[in-house]
Length: 201
Image (cartoon, rainbow, N blue to C red; front, top):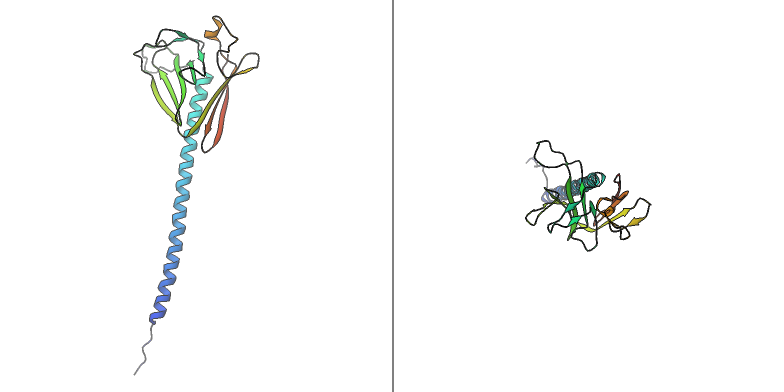
């Protein structure tokens, strides 16, 4: 009789085990590549969000306008207002509000920034002199924010954490603008990021 040639059961099991090990290794490598791609995409999205928020802040600070505003109670507010006991971390009048549609409104916009929980929030009002019925438009610029700090350089080069400074008085407080505003945010993942912006004041 002619002898039949082929693989034994042990050889087949060994071959299957080798293929299984290679498959597991390949799957692990593929999973790691996918995980790294996801992390890279999330980091890129996060960095884009940070850049967008800082660009909005920089544009607002660079176009500060000396026009005062009135709050909901009719009290006149300075063009730039920052008070630790105030409603917002920073409130300001911003010029250069584009009006391509030709709406019946001015070109100065009242803007405010605040820190709510872990979010940096920007508010703006459709009118400069608001009433109790004027609802601000709220936009969450950034998440995972641990802290927000704002400080101001006066014309003499001194730094203040509030504006107008305590030593300033009279009508000047309504229209005075700092030379430089430093806006800093403390992020959970990237640490402290700040911008120092000349205001033209």
